[in-house]
Length: 271
Image (cartoon, rainbow, N blue to C red):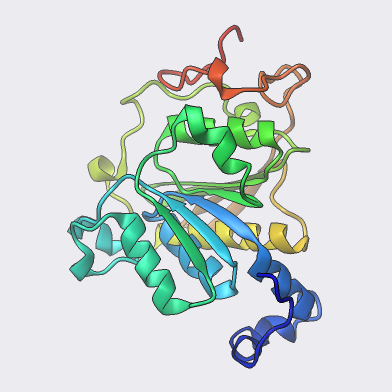
């Protein structure tokens, strides 16, 4: 947006933000001028996209290579029965357009590939990782660390979820998990099932982190991995630290994802 003033409709739409002393009209303008890359338009991506659009984040890029299936509808709340067979990014874009016409959406119907990852993430203020596979998680971590872009990470399994926020000054995903599990050792929700409301909770926390980062508000989940157990209705924040020998965020870390084999353990060559 080039005009920093809020029109009458925006003053009405975002009034509950504007009356917050910590946000106000200047904070809302920041959101309207901000850009976020959301990778994944499924269970986690649905609440992230919904709440970032509602909050007035002006530009959303949504990347996903999948199409809507009826089995998705139990948890992926931005898609409808009529969307079955439609690319999720198209369904998501239609949802956003109906929710908030202020938002510009760029739908990208494919996976993020290593050759484009750094260039892609560098275009956005914040990246939200709503992916469902380890190669993409490690790739986004590596690319955002190299390019200096904060990343809100989330993951779910059956009744449990985890969230952390990775910033250029903090430890990265590889400090937490140096290597990915071997392919096939961690079953997906199609095999084990997932509680339908679980990604809503985890995704909302990711969206909260993204909004806080855009506003420069509060303390992000840096150096803390937040575990959520839906059965026990419990949260536990586990601290973690930068690994000085991390091949990505440690001293002398890589400056290109070209040195990473995103299969198997997703290891950096030579580490």
